[in-house]
Image 1 (cartoon, one colour):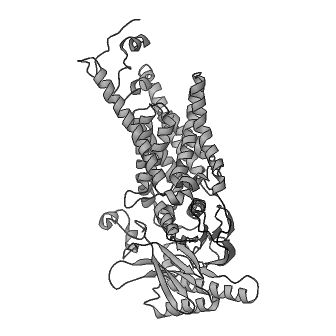
Image 2 (cartoon, one colour):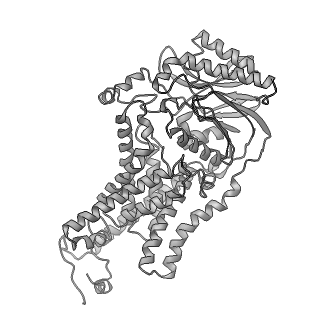
Image 3 (cartoon, rainbow, N blue to C red):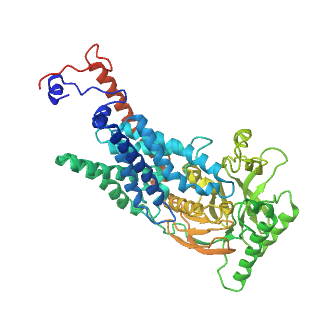
Length: 556
């Protein structure tokens, strides 16, 4: 239809069932031969999958954080102006390209079925994100709305199904990037939003450059690229590792495991002995003057899979090690009540009083520590029966008073969840400890992906993060996100470091989920605006003009 129709009637071109501009976006394809249409479709699908692969390559252990905006720019090129169903399919392909390599470690000891199932499920949610981006791409200032839709997709993945799986948030790949300080301003949602906005703005800049835009359009597009980078640089003063409340000397123990894989659990006593032995060795090093005496020590998650409340031998081994070092020690243990679920518990062990305070892990890993739909899952993998008794979640944050310092416990998988970490800081944590057990995943990239999460959390809440891991990599992370010391994998070791205590709160700590809620409202506003436009177009259409009716032509 010629532009004179619009001028004469005041109406926009007729809308397809998928919303404004969908027909216009797809119109050229209807004039192409079928073979070319298929070729363009295959090319677009391949580029969508490539965008996911590029996004994967931006994640640790590679220091290629800057690839993320380019990956999203490529995805935007595939999604811009597409129909809803095409947006879903292309988003799914991008999600598979991203998550299949990112999560390959989930099948390390249990075969490909859990890995493929998890990756596909998460990719389907990214498909829904692609659908939303395709829809809002028809709006003015669409990069802003599209970046908010991306955050909405991450919010969904962090909550559903089975309590959510936030692994793969854009924010978690940015520990070394220029955008990183945004996390101290608005948490991981704002950091993800900044990266996404820059990526979508990059594509829009290329797109409008080809059509010779006016100055105003060009300036606004440039702003979508420059604003996230400028905001990240402007937020740098929020990133500090100054010792607000003095310093302490902390130690983390990596006792190592007898062998890789799931079967390390059959050597529970050996794992406990390894950590006790390495703690006693640390005590000997202190007496010899080789290292300073720590004010407290943190052991990893599952460092004692024997319940020290029920097993006298386990109790004695731990107690002797704690007495040898002579300072409070946080012990990761499996506690087995007579009834009810198991507990993944951190125990504060005093050299005089013995076990005192406890913290039960609140975010229990589905299909790892608990098996939803056990009878159904067993049809696909008999490995579910390795988890004979499910773990149950705790309720309250855990902040231990260790030598007068507030040490907040965030156990392993919990570091991926915004609320778990923030609630610990709100409860008085001056230091965050993330005791973990990655032995099940061997030498895969999982360890480095999780370490990057811990670095982001350090900057987000301006806290030192201690990461004791059974088999590595254990680390000490300063409040500015720098890793100042770390161990090698599958070696027994101890890290001793003087660290700052901090009690100040970043804007991200104070605001909590509010930035995410604001971005969710922005995404909903974009989709609502699109819906309102569709309804308005239908009301303005000539009476009797059905889906196949041709509009009345006015002028040439």
